[in-house]
Length: 158
Image (cartoon, rainbow, N blue to C red; front, side):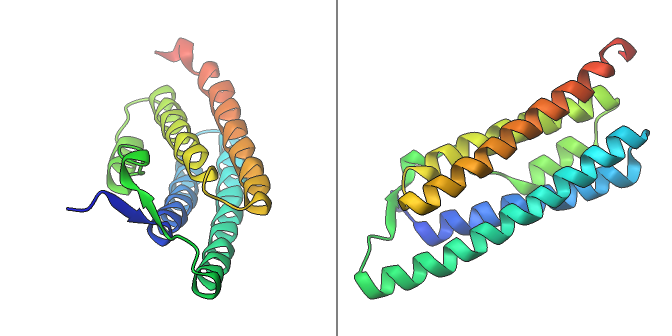
């Protein structure tokens, strides 16, 4: 077992995070009990799709630069240990809750994990990509705010 992970793998994981997020929010939109929640999940899904496009472009750019300039493509694995998003666990968590409050709470937890992952990833990016990654992280933080706001509306239902 190696203690290193390639940058391409990390970017691929970020792409999968966004694909999962888009799929999850589309599914939640389809089962949401209110128009407010439907609109929230639709908006979040759209933003996750935009994030995926950013990471796809980043992967192309990084691969080209790495080949041309022999940029280091290997990163220490311990930096990302326990930070990598597990799609299956997320889907199980989100599709199994018993209340809207629990569902929204699970979404918040997942968004917080994504923010941690992206914050670590940001340290290895070019200045230009760091700037855009800051925007992505800020959008993810806004997701948390929106989800918490909606979740709090359902707190008394428990």
